[in-house]
Length: 600
Image (cartoon, rainbow, N blue to C red; front, side, top):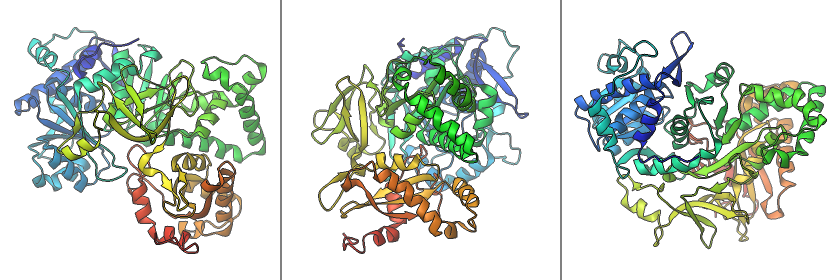
């Protein structure tokens, strides 16, 4: 199934065509899930668009969004797009300084924020921006200077009542053209300053036309929207769900996801690799408390491994041993996702082959995809057709691919972005002389057209002996262990590679207690000889799978938890390698003092 979308307003009108059928779900103040119908969505978008228009917002004007995932986010997005204005989504956990910088750069005139805390963040530096109005989603009477979103919304009528269409509103939305700018999305900046990616209506619409049709989702399907909508992956998924007629259930904050999974019981689950890694680690951690459970888990995974080809082909094994393992283990893992998920998708960052293989052995086939903000985002995606572990699937029909001499993936197509906002030089540097977009990712293609992303070009380490090391696959293997939250392989221009590891501290503390090791503070814990020995075993297991020049010769366990808030991770949970290397420069230098290359 493919769509024929021209603009993102076509997505909105497809959702509204559901009439009195549910298109979204949200929690009310009592914690109960409430439906939002297609007609309700239409009335709310039309009402907020009228408010924006009354404030002088029109085609080309920028409206910023600083909020967690909730129905007001979608309404704001569609209202802005219906006017031909440009929305600028910002991550909720950005600092006030970062928010002010992006607001000033984008020239946004209106910003919609979720909470009083977000309002204070903007208000503190408002004089550094062009913001004229702040709209608050939450009802906070103490914030008198903001416009309350609820005051702009209509009182929804009785369910089932026909909604009168507004001809002027509809005509203006339909008049928006594919080449019109839809959004400026600031990249998470793994290698430096965040840049505003300019995506048109046609960029994103052309991507939606081909990205998810093979899944054949429909009215019977639902998905929880919890990944930040300020990231293109989550935003694209929500648009796709609306096109298919599936229901979106908004979940905020992230900690509420487990409960939401139990209550909503979605049929589609989309996660970044770290979510899947955490699920695996939790299953293994629970099994470690019992020798019987450990043996059952290990036996079940061995059974599942025998049927990988069957599962990759989209079929369910019929052997009695697989059915027993399914009853004992696989079904319980699926129940952790709500028990009804039929499609598991991973995106936003590379999924380690070890993690993908573990889930496949547990009867769960994860469909990995690949894309960038600059590509709207999907470039390739494994579908329900036969897929391959380690690959990101076959490229979409409307994306042309080429590999440069050094293995860098180059792209062309209607979903490629228009450039970086206010950065003509950076835009020019992103394309070669023939107009191919330079992704910065090293890739290969197999004989059947499956694409494999091996690493970021800028992340490749070159030893002083001239050997190239791709750090991401090694880091993914390390993160497969329950004790490891994150890892950073270092060693560029050095004789050998080394690694910094940020522990999964809850797992480490539980492990230490089981070994009768005094936990104390984190610094004391990571310096304990038994803890160091445990992590060295993890490294040794990974080293056994590597070529000699790739092996990790030095290890340092940090006493810090790497998070988005502390700056080591992007909002999509990718490692900010430059930040880590700068923060732990002294520890890295000590790795190489003995071989004389520490100052290279």
